[in-house]
Amino acid sequence: AQTVTQSQPEMSVQEAETVTLSCTYDTSESDYYLFWYKQPPSRQMILVIRQEAYKQQNATENRFSVNFQKAAKSFSLKISDSQLGDAAMYFCAYKLGRGDYKLSFGAGTTVTVRA
Amino acid sequence: GAVVSQHPSWVICKSGTSVKIECRSLDFQATTMFWYRQFPKQSLMLMATSNEGSKATYEQGVEKDKFLINHASLTLSTLTVTSAHPEDSSFYICSASGGPRSYNEQFFGPGTRLTVL
Image 1 (spheres, one colour):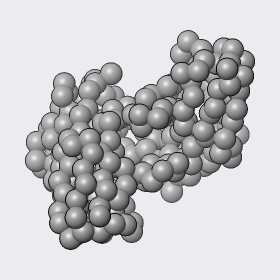
Image 2 (cartoon, rainbow over the protein chains, first blue to last red; image 1 turned 90 degrees about the vertical axis):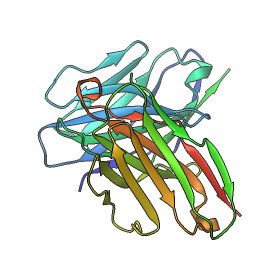
Image 3 (cartoon, rainbow over the protein chains, first blue to last red; image 1 turned 120 degrees about the horizontal axis):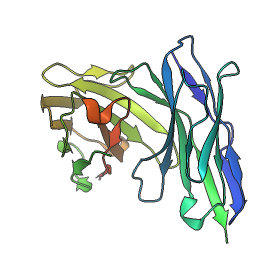
Image 4 (cartoon, rainbow over the protein chains, first blue to last red; image 1 turned 135 degrees about the horizontal axis):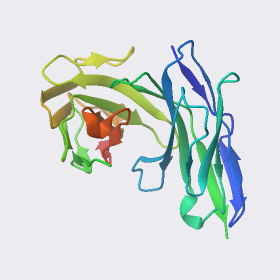
């Protein structure tokens, strides 16, 4: 079974600063996808960024970028120029292959943004 | 992204009654839907995976007779909590995937908060 580990229960960042959330995973597969989801107080799950394992280039979406280290099975999320609206719980997730497979979620990291 | 709705958004019921939660994919055909349960400040726990027209696959430890899942069409899946008890109070989230619009991605509904008195 695949496991996803987020070792930081909470992180705090000053507005406009940068914060990095860590995620490690365990798999013996070579074809998989990794995701970061944001869950604000409304509890609606929002996809932040997606990384395909076969792509070496790190994914970026505006202020969000990842550091994907396949050999180390590490998938960290960097939030640059943090905004108050970034405050939420962030989940790292793993999905096997290119089909409608289930997601395995980490425990989550609560991000607080200080004004 | 595609839109997934859930109804109701919140429900309060008495212990011993059954509650049905609907999950609809509004603008795409969802061949697969997933049901999650989430307690406050915790992660999403997958309960079951349902494919249109076939029986749901339940995760270990999830009572299939208590949490009935039906995926009768490509746009609708339902979760029925039978004989609900206070310990079933939780936040239930569905997600949907399938077809080219959701390739390698699940689209999440807004969730349903269930409170059992």
